[in-house]
Length: 79
Image (cartoon, rainbow, N blue to C red):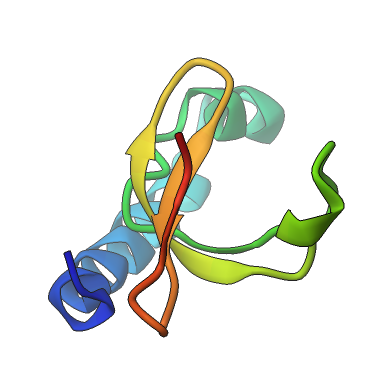
C-alpha cells in the first residue's frame, strides 16, 4: 500500500469529521470516542516504543487498542 493511495481517504475523513463535530445532541467527547478514525492524519505523540514518537501518517487500520498507519515514505507502521 502506498501513501498516495490513501490520500483520498484522508480527504473523505476530513469531511466526515467536520460533519461529526457539527452534530448536535451528543457531548463532543462521546462523539470523539465513537468516531471512525480510518483515514485520519495523525502524529504519534506518546508511545511505549520511543522510536514511534513523531511519526506522521494516515490511519489505515484501527483495532481496539492500536492504530496502524502509512507514512508519506510509504512505510507501514503497526503490527
